[in-house]
Image (cartoon, protein in one colour):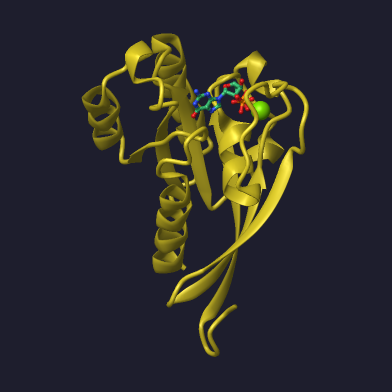
Length: 175
Ligand code: GDP
Ligand code: MG
């Protein structure tokens, strides 16, 4: 429900990060409130929509998810075109995925969209005993590169709604 007089923002959000980090799971958790233990990486909707109502605005998200093209370590320009927000995801149990996340951030920076709102998401924090990437490592990298840092679990839903609310808030502020 949008408040009378509040603005409506349509925002394209792109999900980036290596295969298996939980991009589709985060989108499904946010949009449908569900989680699947065995998510086939190349299958699933490549596009989700969801509406979030804040006091100051109603944000209509168009969420672009990959259908496995990230395995080639780059995405077609149309994937990024017109994006207002980008979420780069890594898996805290994989140092490799964190190193790759940095490459995805560079790839985003190459798109040259200075207004893009960028988030770095450390997913799968429910697997604390298997953690390979410390909270401070992610936090530090995000700080140095002007990204907002959030730790999530698509499995337990930890911080998932908070992540999208924070993105919506920043979009509302910037629009
Ligand atoms: P994508 O390739 O980045 O879209 O990753 P998926 O969403 O397909 O997830 C890859 C695998 O990791 C699947 O088996 C998911 O069930 C699992 N997964 C995703 N998010 C989490 C999480 O937060 N915690 C745990 N334990 N597993 C997760
Ligand atoms: Mg996927």
